[in-house]
Length: 427
Image (cartoon, rainbow, N blue to C red; front, side, top):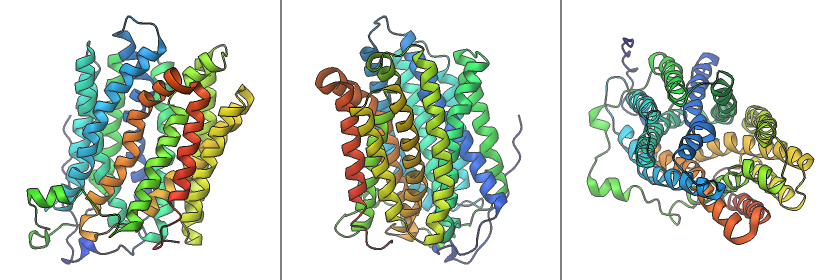
C-alpha cells in the first residue's frame, strides 16, 4: 500500500512552538484526534485484555492461574522497563525535531509503524522469549506514538479546552477495549489474524490525523541544545524546584496503581473469589458497565472542568471514588455489589483520565520541553498497568487474598487523591 505524502508543517514565528496556544481547536480536529486514539487503544488493550494472556497461556503446561499471571506479569514488567526510557526519550527528541513536517508528526507516524509491525510479528511467536521481545518492541512503538500525540495537546489546545479534548483520549480507550475484544471474539479470529487486524486498524486510524493536522515547524536556530548529559539530567525534575509537577506525578502514579490493582485480576476474582458460573461472560458485563461510565465521565466531567476552570477538585473526587469502589469489592464481595462498584470505578477513572491529563499540561516546568515532561507523566500511566498484575498475583497468593488486593487498591487511590491537594498553581 502506498501511503499519501505528508504535507509540510505550518510555518510560524520562531517563538510559536513554545507559545501557549490560544486558538480553539475545531470539531474536525477533535474527531481526527479521537480517531487516532481509538486505533491506539485497540492496538494496545486488545492484546493486554485478550490476545497476549491467551498466547502466554498456550506456552505453559501449568494450570495454576497464579503461574499464568506471573508469566504474563514478567513479560509486562520487562516491557514496562522499556517504557520508562521510551516515553521521556521520545518526548525529548520530538521537542528538538526540526523536520519540515513539524516536531510531533514524524514521531507519531514512526511510532505507529513500529507498533503495528511489532504486533504482526508478535502474532507468529511460539516461545515466551519471542513473545517478550516483540511485546516490548510493540510497547516501545506505543510509547513513541503516544508521547508525541499527547504533546500535541500542549502544543495546539488552549487551556480552556484541555479537559474536553483530553476526554477524547479516555473515551476511545473505553470504546477501543470493547470494540477490539468483540472483533476478535465475535469473528473467532486466530491469534495471527487478531494481532494483524488491530495492527492494520492502528495505522488506518492514526494516518488521517498525521496527514490532515498541521504541525508547527521548529527552526534550527530555536532548537534546544542536545547533549548526552543534558538529556539524561533532563529526565529528573526536582520536586523541590517544581513541586506542582512532583505532586501531580505522584498522584497519577498512585491512582493508576489503584485502578490497575482493582481491575487487572477481575477474572480470577470472579472465578476463585466469587466462584460465579460463566466468569468470562460476567467479566464482559462488568467491563461494559465500567466502560459506559468511563465514556460519560471523561467527556462530560472533562468539559465541566473546563467551564468551571477547576482541576484539583475533580481529580480528588475521581480518585476518591475509585477508592470507594475498591473498598466495596473488598468488604462486600457479592456479584451485585461488584456491578455497582464497576460503575463507580468507571465514573471515577473516566473523570480522572480527562481532568488529570489537563492538569498535567498546566504544571509543566518548561514550554520548550513539553514532549519530554509529558513523557515522564505518561510513565505514571503505562508502568502501573504493566507491573500491577505481577504484584497483584503476589498479594493474592502469598499475603492477603483478594480482599487484601482490593484494600491495597483503595489505599493507593485515596493516597493519590490526597497527593493532588498540595498543587498550588492550578485551581
